[in-house]
Structure formats: structure tokens, C-alpha cells
Length: 306
Image 1: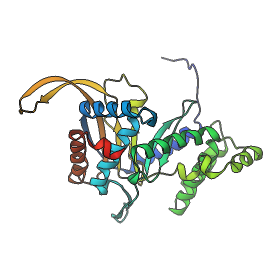
Image 2: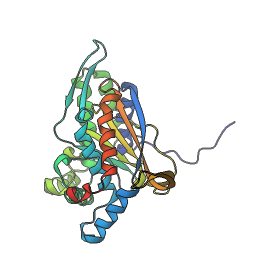
Image 3: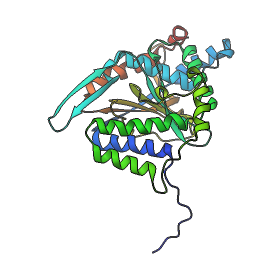
């Protein structure tokens, strides 16, 4: 049966970069995933109380979830790492990072997604995190983000050359230069306009390079979703990724002060924890989960993080 084609959409620069990195992920990384259901009922209540007392901070639930993950990462430093692996000789090394730099997918106004590197989140308060994110939003609006993204694609090609993958690099170059999916080059005027913007006021290559870990909040894209993310790609050389779902109401166990249990409606956020099995075993993920458990049981931490 022949099916008519309504429309053919060729890969944009955004799609090429995503395709390049995700293909590398699924062809080179042995994934293991674990679904963690975070009961955020009490934590959200404490969060809303905090916002009532200080409504001008503008802290969002997304920022709160990033902070929770950062605190959990501190308890499991092995997940905040990059891996170097040589399959030919079965050798490798793992670089545990000191800074927590979060790769976070960001939805642009035109519907494209770009992954932004939120740097040095290990020492930031909730307010500082929110200010950083707000500043990043302004930087995206201030410039043509396609220009640093083009440089990222060039860097990917150069990376293949450094690895000795000459043929692969040539293919990437041909795909970018010819055919219906060729990358549109920017004019000299556009590049000059981008270069005139101060580095602190625009998105640069450093804002787009892979961080030490990926945290993706799909719950922010569709808040009424009822499912959860079961798989999530780990972007090399990272070894861990977190996929956060939306807030959902579920029946759960409630324990009162006397220790008695009952069933009630709870607010739950499903989280997909994915790790590279070459670098990590589940026992190295356990401290991350245990810290999540502790945070969810101690909502008074919000005042300390503020």
C-alpha cells in the first residue's frame, strides 16, 4: 500500500546535534534505569509556604527539583563523572568531577530543544540557582543561538578527527555542506552582531558543551501527564542522567505521629535514574536514592537552602 507524504522535514542544526549525540549514546553506552517515585506531598506544602512568605524570589518547582538532585549528587559523587573507555583494549578511566555542571534540555520559543550547561550548581542556593536560570533565559533571547551551536557541530567533527575517525569526520562535513539537510551558514553581518554582544550576555559554546550530568524535566513540558519516563539516554562522556516527570496524585501510605498507617492521596513525581553500567553499579546509585529519601522526609531543609 502506498501512503501519501503530507510533508518532509529535513534535519535542522538542532536535530543534527541531538541525533549525533543520542546515536552515540545508544550505540556506545550500556544503560541501566531505575524508576524512583518521589512522594513530594509534604515538600511541596513546605515549598508553597516558603513562597507565601517570600513571593518575590520567583523560585519555581523546576529549580527546587534541580536543587534536590544536586544535594543527592553530593551524597553520590561517583555519578557526577565522565568516562573514557577503549573497547578495543577493554581499558578505561572515570573522572569524578568536583563541580556539578547540569546539562538541562531547554525548550526554545520556536519549538526546538537545546541542552544548556548550568555550571557550578554545587554551591548555589535556591535563589542563586533561580537567578542563574533567569539570566540564561535572557541570554538566549539576546543572541542567535544557532551561531554557537554551529561551532559545537564543528567541534564534534574535530573530535572525531582527534579520535582517528577520519571517514566519519568527512561524512559529517559532507552532510553539513551538501544536500537538503545542509547547515545554513551565517552571514558575516550576523556573526559580527553576535560577536559584539558581551560574553556574559549571550549563549556561548561553554554554555552548550556537555556538563558533568544531565537532568531533564519533562514534567515542565506537559504537567497533566500520567505516565513516566522509562528510558533516558546518557550523553557521553557522562555516566548518569535523571528524567523528572510531572506531579501526579496517587494512593499512598500515610503514617501519623503514633506510627499508625492509613491510605490517602499523595503527590508523587516519578524520576527515571539512568546510569552507564561500565562506570557504575547499582550500589553506587544507592547513596543518591537514600539522600532523596532523606530530603523528602525533612522538608525543613528548604529554609537552609534558601
